[in-house]
Image 1 (cartoon, rainbow, N blue to C red):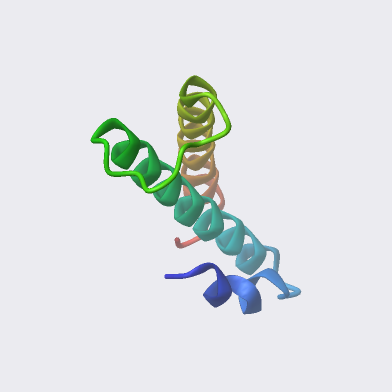
Image 2 (cartoon, one colour):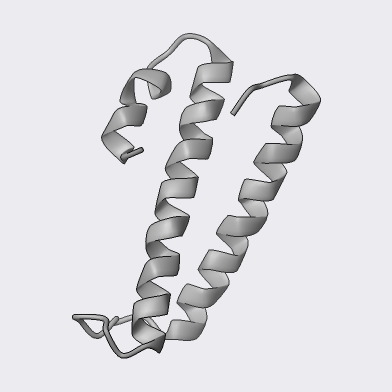
Length: 81
């Protein structure tokens, strides 16, 4: 899934759709950040990040924690992801 594929969900009047959009967008961004960190660690990243890698790693950690919280909430509220 790509970010642009979440637009319809994001604009929905149904909070469950908007919830799914938030979840999918976060998953997409976290995966891209994880890939960037992987490439950096393996010397294959095609650019030099301006932000310290420690900050980016902490951001990814926080994003993954947020994903887990959204999954827990979805389970509690009966929202299929």
